[in-house]
Length: 601
Image (cartoon, rainbow, N blue to C red; front, side):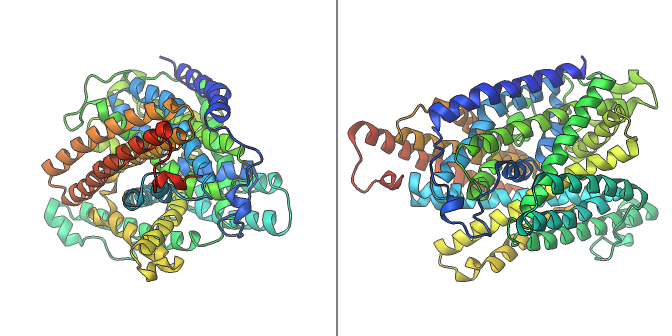
């Protein structure tokens, strides 16, 4: 089948969702009010609460939620075939993910910009707030660990991406200064920044940078030689191991600084420029598909699933999180985006539209990993070998998780060559896209982790972590320890199934909060209740499968982490069911004395 079919069907479905379904939700369900005073205006402080142009805010929100996950998740999930992955991305985005993101942003805006974790106390109860905060803490821990490993691996595999990625930070700082301190417009500085980035991509190809093993954390040559009997292989493995550790430590040192800077200085301008970059990337991939018309050689439904991979149900729905529906999006929407919303109607454009943009990227990832990557694999041996080589790459679950980014980057390299971009440059371009989005998510997630740690400090009266410097330090150190704790970062992608499960669990619980609020407001609730019920069902099932796998493979760290999250989930679900009963009773009989829902605005 032609990849053009997937491209056209996917984009038309997303356009329909934006034009029809999102308008229905905005007018009939959430009932957006243009006169509502948003938290950005009410609590404006120039650091976190900053009324922001909706296009700039869209760039921040879009690139913060996109990250690498809508690339990696679909890149892994196509192991079951392209059809299940494609259907979940399209229907999941339109009817679940975009509704969730829109709802999280809207409900936070209505509650003074409070985070989802804090809202749980008002809507469900005090215990729920603590449970929510703990689940969020674990999710952000895994998000930051996984994305740091992905970025480190990409820097190692694509040294030409180092200069443009780090150079873009300087450019973003200049853009932020021009926009907010000199009164320059938004469009011209951002376009200039984008052009500068592409010049740096060309320069990066000419001057690749490889980080030496200066850290000394790699295993010794003697240790590895004893393990495999090959001293040369041992030396190279030791060098790469030390390189990965070095990059991970540098990345977390950077996020410490980035997450405490005012949002206008780095976060907003960088995200706005990256938003342009993402649209360019989607345009290049789409144009490449049209020009080359590659065949989707991967099977629609893979009948030869590797022995170490389970069936697609229910694991598909937690493997593709971002790109369909993701609890992390609710954290961004309620953690940073709601504090920058200038007008409430902008929530539709930022929340629903941001999810649609991410779904589009996920569709491009599916095409790149099933069509473009197959062309890349078969170009030296003939198209007839494309399917066999693709099946070889996806011959194991571990290979699929470790090689998802490789499949995307090389697939984009081939597709970009269809519009005249040299493949070597296109590969660096694709790497920069993935790294930029992953780094943006890393910045935002560390900032959110700081908020959560500070809130837990208030809850348990631990004053030292209520300081933003100390809270950021705890966030950075804990995430770095998890990233390095699995084979010094080499096994970081083992976290992905647990990350996906926790992510979807949080999305279901966020939809529960929005549903409770809608019940209180006596508005139709099926829009959020249907995806919530489905999501909580499949994630609970998937968590049990993951726990069984961790136990069988003797993965003690992941088993303990997963078990803790599972206990929190079940406890919070019972709290949520009790809250639904209370709210329904109040809606029918009138509010009960001392009800927690009396505090809802």
